[in-house]
Length: 277
Image 1 (tube, rainbow, N blue to C red):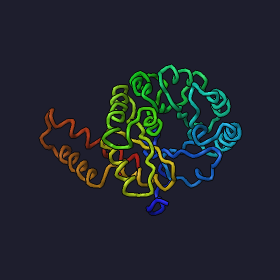
Image 2: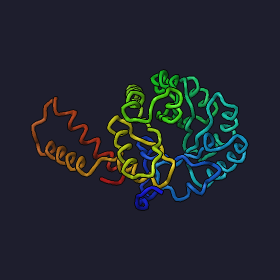
Image 3: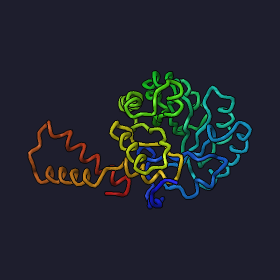
Image 4: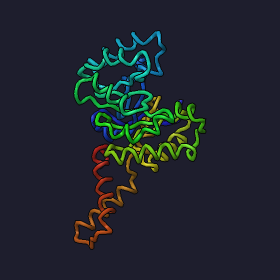
């Protein structure tokens, strides 16, 4: 088990999905793992966590879960034989908060998925291959795309890149730039498989330094550390309050200072969103 204390986050402060930090993938065949999750967003997984023979049972279980607890669902990729069945099974559930679409490699795959869903259902596009990364800007600009996410494990298998922050800085940065250019929130980073709280915290902080604002987690115990790393720190909030306070007191403000002031206000607004204001 990871060496962290039990999470203290409660569901009383619900974080908007645009700002959600921790996204916990939970097999639709093991829904007990979702009951006490402290992640900002729970994602029922119909894809990698479910073998082909278990897909029908997983869809039924996910649909039943959605009746009592609104949540997200990861569906199989468009080129698989399971994608349409996934969408047919859960796409019209009133408890569906959004879809995480696996292995997206074109904007057309997102638009095709949106066509099979009720209007307005949000779609997080998982970029998991070299082809997907090359198309990231088009995918981000597709009107149905809500956020981008990085399927780092499959991406490394596809490209041969090492699981190293330097090696993965380029694909992560490219997703950040594509998201910003399309007016999307920061992308969601891939999970970190570790038993060390320090390693997890460092990985999530690296994600934030690169401009990513969310992170997939596979264990409930990881959510608290990810939330901590992807939130404004006490030092940042102290600086932000001081900066905004000096501006409000009539401090000298010129054009060159406006980006600094905007950054300070954004940090305070984010802290309010997370209940840390």
